[in-house]
Length: 115
Length: 112
Image (tube, rainbow over all chains, first blue to last red; front, side):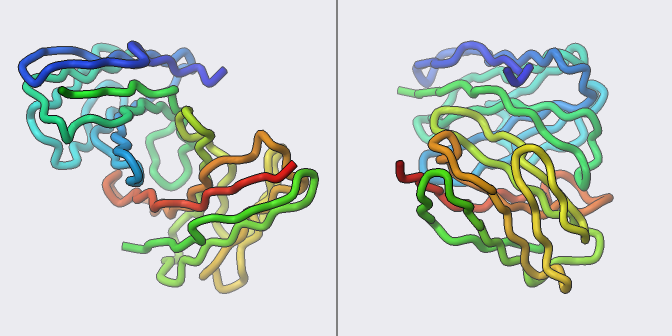
């Protein structure tokens, strides 16, 4: 039990659809993250939130829009995606946003397929 | 940016120790060495991290070379559940998050 849940676990959407991915952490952590993992590629950091404030946006296209309404919830809103956006989207949280020492706890991911 | 290199894949027999190497020859004095692993169909899982001294926890041990240009993750007794991709990453205090780079990692197979 990682304490980080993601819904849905699988999502298929068309390029004109709008959908949202949800992440919830029950660990009392202060930082939350979105990562993208494409097939046979390393994890890519997309967004970082610390105490509900966005602290990093890794040059992600605007068709991905994050939202962090409180320290336990993180959303990734998707619109007009491209087939190359198909990937595993992972959410993580950590108690301390210091990149040198924080330990991240990952959710199981949402497998996204864009048709 | 300091980067790491790891073998693409390794094999181990069940119940034997496994030594997973990582080279980080451009490491700076403030870089921490972190290890994560990713089991099939799951998100990555934190394993261990250290700065200069060797570290032990319930999952593994981390041996850091004296010059810090390499490190080794040690699984003392491999089980089938340890089959995963192991990532060695460097994290520098005070830098922004986009300096955190996951490489391709080492895919560990455990043979029964």
